[in-house]
Length: 86
Image (tube, rainbow, N blue to C red; front, side):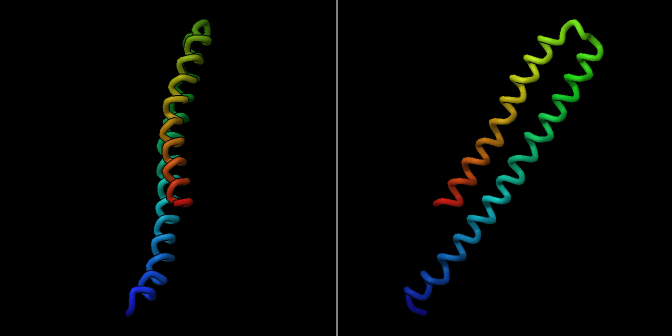
């Protein structure tokens, strides 16, 4: 095979693996934050049920924790976008 034929065969293969990697990245990158945020919200509901007078502090702390957790999913989105549009 000559060099031009190899380029024609390898280009689509690299693009296919980049798209596959982007899909896996978003799948795993969204799984962890989704589970973490759900767990945090559940524990916050339990805490509010035990101490309703502390609702504001619990809610504020939960939101900050979820924002930090969501940053992992945003990083996964950025990596996936780079892979798709490289």
